[in-house]
Length: 291
Image 1 (cartoon, rainbow, N blue to C red):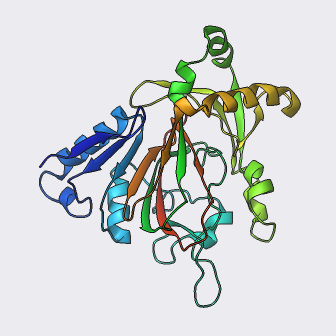
Image 2 (spheres, rainbow, N blue to C red):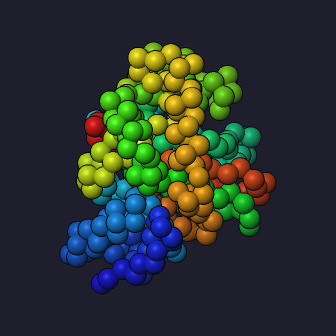
């Protein structure tokens, strides 16, 4: 079988004609996934697969084709602060939801991702792919916006590229924890150094070789060797540059979308402009050390 592909714009591709819960398990499954992965990479690391109906195990099985997952056996967990939002039976699945259960407990993180960030960039091996499945969406609102950090890098001046090529930045979960998480939720041991790491400001994609900016307002605290005050004008300039409209794609969710994005080359922002019930499930693929 072959997949059908439609560009979403200068960034992203829409995939139809495949059932990832069924079609990848047959004898042609590896070849079919190869086509899906190639389409994903050629589209800048953003892909929506429409009209899917998968359970949690199928979600995990599909995600593992990209690589090992956070919370797989022998693999590191996500930060402890989000542990309450993991699926009780499938810890590889992080739940994003504004719903509560019969006891009034959240069924997922309500305000997940309402700031520009790249998932888990504060780890030595940060996230590669994130795979988010839309199980219940509101009738309007709740879009997710993506910034193409490779296109943003390409558009920089030669002088800026030369300067940034020699710099690293510090990524720290504490940056988001200070503004995005209520104090009773944050777990103190998340600040013991396990969620802080230094990465190059310009990274080279391990699969495509393309260069992109690798900083984000959600987790980047400062440039290594600079104070926070000295870093701010440079970082703020990069954030403003990267979030210009020409580098953005805004995804309007449809029921049963699977959205796959490459954290190595994209930032994203979840727009919290809805009141109706929303429930999504995400797996997170562990990547390589940025270089």
